[in-house]
Image (cartoon, rainbow, N blue to C red):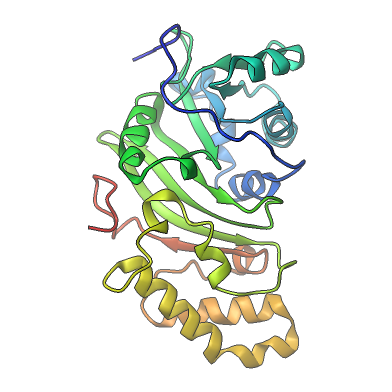
Length: 279
């Protein structure tokens, strides 16, 4: 299962990123399941958080270390890059529980290491859709049952993003939710989220596909609740989400999500085990 020393599987990302681009991703995890970061039972005692494809410099990994270690000061963190120069540039920031290694989807783990959480953002967007499932299947090898991966795409400053949230079980990945995130600074336009859909969805926003139907329902919900704009963008976002939920979509209704700009479409009971949500 461990592939340290083997040729990394994957391609280099463009690598450029802005400071705090992924802050809302980390904050989402901290609110969604903080216990995942603090678990010490069994193999979780030594399991790590992996920042896959951190880019030209170490900033996203180091920013995550700062946030996550407020919950667990001893959390081991690994930044993985497929470009040796990027790893060399990051290594001066390594310490006893912060590491940077050359690798790809075949994670460069040590024999005694396993993974509790993977964040892979702005990585798979550059691949062909046919590469999506093999990448997911490879990554699943390293994650403990109960662990998570959040994988998606953001705009350059992280103000808008969408992500798959998948959980590892005995059979592999199981889709848990599709997350839509906004900090409201760009207003509220449902179509903005279409441009940052994960690779398994972005080419399927066409008639006859479930993701197309979802967006059409969300757009109608936004139009039907547009009067809420008078109270501000946030209230309109909340009202549109509540209307979308009334159309039969399993949207998490809790204000702790909606008021912070996170729309969670729960997929646990809908997504097949083989990850192909659009068949």
